[in-house]
Length: 93
Image (cartoon, rainbow, N blue to C red; front, side, top):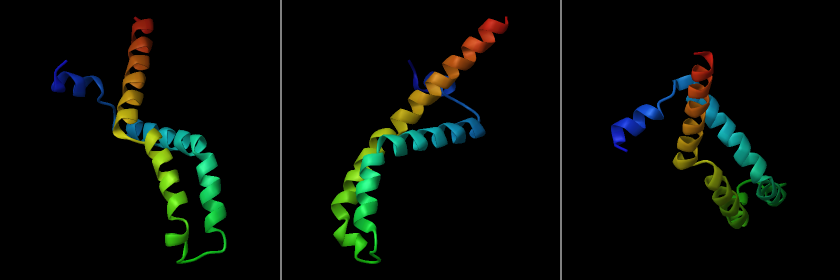
């Protein structure tokens, strides 16, 4: 499949893309809740020292979040959305 054709198939409106990004972030936060909790415990009661005291926890959290919030995940969500929309259009006809 060519780049242009793939781009057309995955093209969605800006508002739809924003909604998909929001959904992607919500899922990532849910999936990484364990790491979020560990980081929050480390950061509790700290101010500037959180940067170096919680570096390991922050890195683990970011690694987890990146698994669920990257361009490949967003493109897959767009493909699924477009597939659903095509199914709706086909059903109407």
